[in-house]
Image: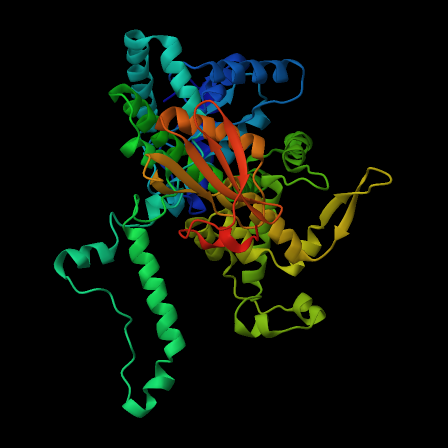
Length: 510
């Protein structure tokens, strides 16, 4: 397995056995020993030894190579979600660093295998990406490298327009109402609660029945649209309905599959890194680290967790939150009685030992993602302990200062940055706008305005694939705004009302 030296192979076996003794469960892990140039090349491909040819991989390789040469960064570990898992060790690392990396890798591999958000990812992605590369190279030979690469550029500019929750939610292929109308000719009616005649107007108020009838009518009107309901997976909609050539459909399908493979890694970055740090810390400090290696280990470990005000280090936040959860559940700081306690001093001294902490963090590792992880477990005590404040720039000094100590504001900022990877949520609501075959999308506005320049560039990419004018409705400074691109001219106009499919957009006044 791999090309490890006898010493590293023995360390791998020891680390693997220790990890399993703590309950970690992972696929076979194959470690490869590489030099820094090879590691930079693999990292530029996203951790895989081969991908399709494209200039962005070369650009990433140049960035990593120069960053390493100038001493600005160094890749310690690289591991791939696959069965078996592949991990890479840099040949120039010290034995202490190799131990740390191996322990860290086994934490990642356990997370890949057991976290629910990775359950739908391909476990043979090493082979899948190699096949993608071979197919795209054939298309380049047949249709020209520049033409295929330009098409890939367009898809890359749109590859965040997916629905990261679609693998876990059956959204249905058609509305239930549509299926019912195929078998029933009668129009939809509001379902009333059975009641005596003299109580009917109280049990089923006329105002409520009228609103429900209007809602049903609006739903039926929407169901006659194309698509019948808003589509968040814009790439899937384009794949199904855009006028693409066969090879373009295949390339789009491949890149969409890759976007979905990498999506869970973005959805669990804080948890994944925190889990790996938790286990490398435990294995190194209790088993693997010799006395002569303590200083070097601490130096490397502290560098991994270093942070500064105004920035989030996923390694630091993740591991501290896992430790906080373990401590809470070990001391019984959970449940209705604890939550009902509103005395900070009593909560701080609360200790009813249950020793459930280890089981709890394994449970958390299995079912949460970063958004639910932060939302559920960032408490006032944790925020105060970690000095989690809202920072802003002092207009007079230009320095970062604390502007708010309310942990709820901190949580709001974190959740806003993590939801949909910090990208706006865009949905297709009409594929035949104005009966002209134009594409109409809506930005599901939840408080943050679009970056209009970036939005116009996105519209240009969409128009190139759709072949007809495209529009996106959003809110800017509290007013509805429609951005359009017809293939030549970009325009921006104020609109009075939103598309009925996404009501939140209509909250702004025109």
